[in-house]
Image 1 (cartoon, chains in turn red, orange):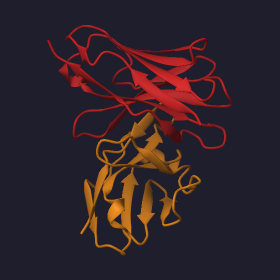
Image 2 (cartoon, rainbow over the protein chains, first blue to last red; image 1 turned 135 degrees about the vertical axis):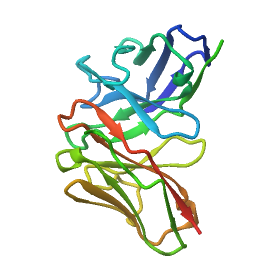
Image 3 (cartoon, rainbow over the protein chains, first blue to last red; image 1 turned 90 degrees about the horizontal axis):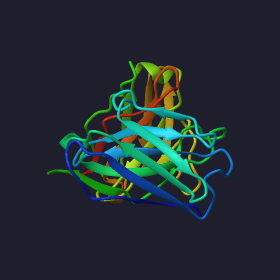
Image 4 (cartoon, chains in turn orange, purple; image 1 turned 30 degrees about the vertical axis):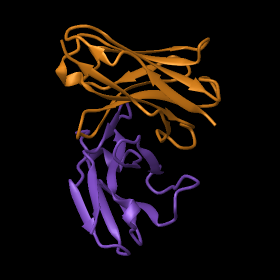
Length: 123
Length: 108
């Protein structure tokens, strides 16, 4: 059973860069036709999609975050990484890593989610 | 527009049927997915590609689609169904993913 585990610093200062890692266990990042994405949720708010990365390394990002976001993979470590630059208090949120398990059969159905990692932007 | 609109809240009595709608221009072209999220937990997939149910999701959860509006129907609502429900789709070109604002289901 594939599991996702997000990790990273819980506190980031304004204007700095937020870096998070999603470690995939129980399977390979490049298995089948899966892709991985990052989703965040501010306290009491809805889900906000940040971006995704396909096994090929191709990426798509939310238009509202595109200028500050980079998603990458390290297949040797079975990890997906998120980098968000120039953070502000508005970037304070729970950050989730999620998998679209089979985009040929199921489309962008996020069938596996990590437990999330809370990031606070504050000086 | 890629926005998805959901009612902020829906209330039903136990045993009744809850219907949560999601509307957006792109829904006529793109598939919709539904998730349930309980406080402090990650979302769980309920419906994919408008109407399909993953294994393990009870049959009382169903999805339907009509043009620019899709509906999540929960039959025989139970107290444990009280949660936030989110629809998800994509922009009309499929370039990026969008979520609806979420609907809080209250079981009276």
